[in-house]
Length: 335
Image 1 (cartoon, rainbow, N blue to C red):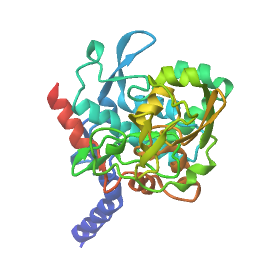
Image 2: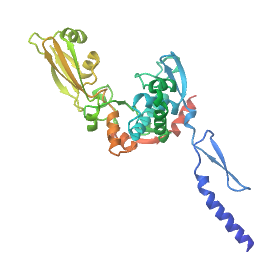
Image 3: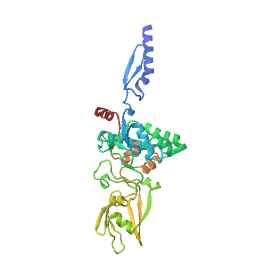
Image 4: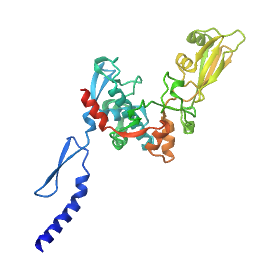
């Protein structure tokens, strides 16, 4: 009888301890020893520590490459690329894109950066700012803003976006014109997950519309073209699915919308223009290339109650949110 009672007590203790055996902290080591009772110890494997992967970042001000733990790097990117006062779900979506972007770079290093870097800290890749830079930028608000960014990054730690098992090119931009752009309509290659979608929330962005003006002489020099004598400028021939200029003709010379944007330094390739005497006035809608996730669109979705997982799956078609573990193993094997 005593033996039966003792066995029942031991069984009850195991049931009580079972949740603590199954829930293993996200720690530094690869294994953790969990004590079940005085006589027995069970060794359980933990997830690989995300911070064990470092990102070689070329710091433009210092002109040197620095290894930065990946989650610290993601915090610095989110802080530099998205307003900290945005809805927390939008910040989480940005954290996911930032982590995915750099993992794609780590798995396929570009090879054309100095000192073994895989990314720069500029708009060439993703803007990254360290704590000292953010303290100067935010001043007395640093602690509050940093904590908010840190929370968003921690809540998505170890997650990336994949398409058919591979990290995606998680491009993003500030503000759309009401639609995002198919990748091949702005860049050369078509990506199945970078498709044009409606983004109506962007109309509330302070960057939704902009106006600028050039003299006729400035306009002609920047584009390398002479305007017709009849006072006209040129005609827009076709639009992309994202309602941006695909092709425009100026006095017999053809340009893509992107070429006009780049040559004139416009905010967007959604533009219209009119001539007013010796000036040419141009109005643009949106801010950025328009491919991938709109940041102001993401914030608008979050304000309507959408979660970060819904946001990223809206802007990146048919993607999955995947754990980073297998990619960490690949990166470790490469070293």
